[in-house]
Length: 186
Image (tube, rainbow, N blue to C red; front, side):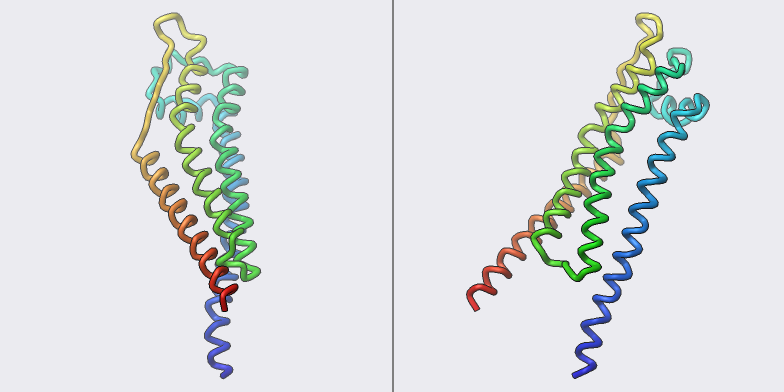
């Protein structure tokens, strides 16, 4: 009998270890994302190489004074706030896993919130890029201002991942509901 108990403990121990690693990764990732965002918007050279080149705006049409960089930072922070929400939900999901709360209503709800946040970040991404292009070229001469709308393969892949997580969360919620219903019957 002790072998059967050890076999059920081992997978749970792996889940607990992985969950701890993921909680640490979530916190480190959030901190690095915020620091990275601040680092980009502090330096005009980095803005030029990272943001302006991605938007494909001629540098001659771009203004990078302090006010424009602050506005750019604030605009860029919008999708980051959505991602932080998803990371917070992931942190809490892994905390629950560490406690052994795996197939629960709360776990499926957190997974659903992560999925919706990913889909939300994808949805606002093109709007944020458009706002950035307008903010960066607002100081340009009339006829030289830009409005850039982009949707990339990465957006498609992130939306697909968000949809996949949403489907898994809905299936998990249904499985939890059925299991609870069966517990009441027996």
